[in-house]
Image (cartoon, rainbow, N blue to C red; front, side, top):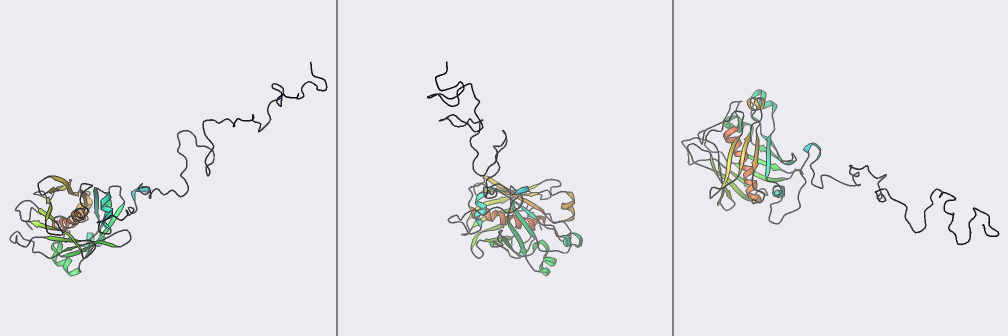
Amino acid sequence: MAQQGYSAGQPQPGAPYPPQGEYPPGPGYQQPGYPPPQQGYGAPPQGYGAPPPQGYAPPPQQGYNPVAQGAPPQGGRGWMQAPTGIPGCPPGLEYLTQVDQILVHQQVELLEAFTGFETANKYEIKNSLGQKVYFAAEQSDCCTRQCCGPCRNFEMKILDNHQQEVMHLERPLRCASCWTPCCLQELTITSPPGTVIGSIEQQWDMLYPKFDVKNEHGDTVLKIKGPCFTCNACGDVEFKVETKEGTEIGKISKQWSGLVKEYFTDADNFGVQFPMDLDVKMKACMLGAVFLIDFMFFEETGNQDNQRVGVWQ
C-alpha cells in the first residue's frame, strides 16, 4: 500500500530515481559511479575520428614522414637520406657506412648510340632499394675521347644529392699493351677532393685481370681478380674481391643489361658487394674500381666492342 501523501509511480523518500521497472532510463542517463560501457575500443585519441574497423591500421599521424623513418620513397625512387656525421669518416662518405651493396648504372647517350661519337660518361649510383646515393660524371676533352677511346685519361667527379663533390677519381694516360707491363693502369681516389684515401693498381698477368686496392699509405688491403674472358653472353661477369690472405669478401659484377642495350650502346650496369663493416675508405676504393674496370674491359669505341682477355689490349 502506498504511503500517505504519495501515489503509486511517484518517487518515494530514500528510493532511487526512477523506480526500477517503472521508467526506462532516458537518453544520456548513466548510473552514478560507473563509466559508459565500451565496445572493445577506448576513447579515440585526439585527431582521429571513429575507431578503425578491425584489421586496418589507424591513419598516419600528422607530420609523419616515411622517408625520415628509413622507408624508401614510392617506387624506390628519390635520394637516400643523408646519415649523420660519423667521426673519422670523410665528409659525404657516410652513405657508404649504411650499405653493403651498391648499384652503378651508366646512362645511355643517344648521340653516342646512333653516331658512335664518344661522349663523356655519366653514372647513377644507387643502393639496393633503388634510392640514389651518388651521381658520377666524367671530365675529359673531346679530342682525347675520340683519339684514345677507352684508354683515355680522365677525371671523375662523384656528387651527392646536394650536388657537392664528395669523391674525385683520376686516371692518368697509360700505354695499354701486353708488351708494356711496366706501364699498367691505375686510378687514384681522393675524398674530400685533394685528400688521397686509396688507389687501384693493375698487376701484370698474362690471363687474368688483377688489381691491388691500396690505402692512402700505399699498403695493399684488398685484391681484385677477374675472369680470363670478360665476354659472357647473356650472363654476368664477376670480379672477385679478396683480402691479402685470399679470403673472398665481396665482388664486382658487370650485369647483363639485355640484348638491345648490350649490342647498341656501351651503357653498362654494375653491382658491388662488400661487408657492412668494411672500412668506408675501402668501400670508396671498390666503387672507384668499377669505373676503371668499365673503361678497361667494357667501354666501346665507335660502337666496337672492347672486351679483352687478361691484360691483353
